[in-house]
Image (cartoon, rainbow, N blue to C red):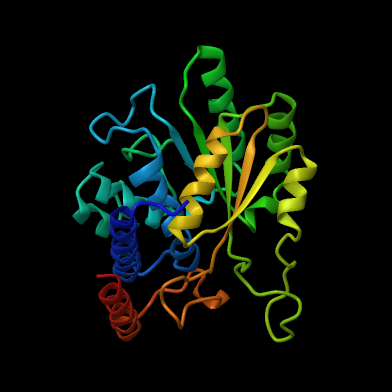
Length: 287
């Protein structure tokens, strides 16, 4: 079912704002990732402004839902959304990657409010997410744990060890979301003039089904597709669910979309202004 039109318009407006915050923060820092953060914006917005049971004034609330950004290099998107939600001032986002800033290049659960798990080395968010879900069951808590994975990240073996155990224990209070943008850092073997890397993992939905998970596919940029998929996942009982969210790397800025060069490229002043003009045009269409 389509979501409330007013909520959808608000989320779409926030998506433009978050993309501008990502671009400006990385530009100011002179370092950071672009493509992956831009592809995850709608997923994280749906979490923090519709789905998660959280309290920005009490980030350590024991009964809160958990959101684990396992692909930690995309954390500038998460910082921007946490700021909009009120976990810390928006201005702090623009201290990204600076010495002594709480907005480090990978999220720090000790220093940064709202971060449920520190992550950096890819794949390492999966096992803690499963642990949190199992702990909720043992403690009689009803919080839900959401695990946000990158599609390149799921080439890590630790992810599939988690998937096996989650199925074994029928952990239905755990949902994995794969940000399936299908573009990794250095291009792929079919691109003869590029650095050679493996293709992204293929047949993603089938692999999760093979590990015993319920699988839902959705458009990761369409709130009318994404939010119902998440609600369906949370309502599923007897097995964990994986949402395969089809996304576009660099989403929202046409010259960055599906271009691996923007995985971690810093926009210069001209590119920043060009991207802002495009995002402002998108915003005008929404409003």
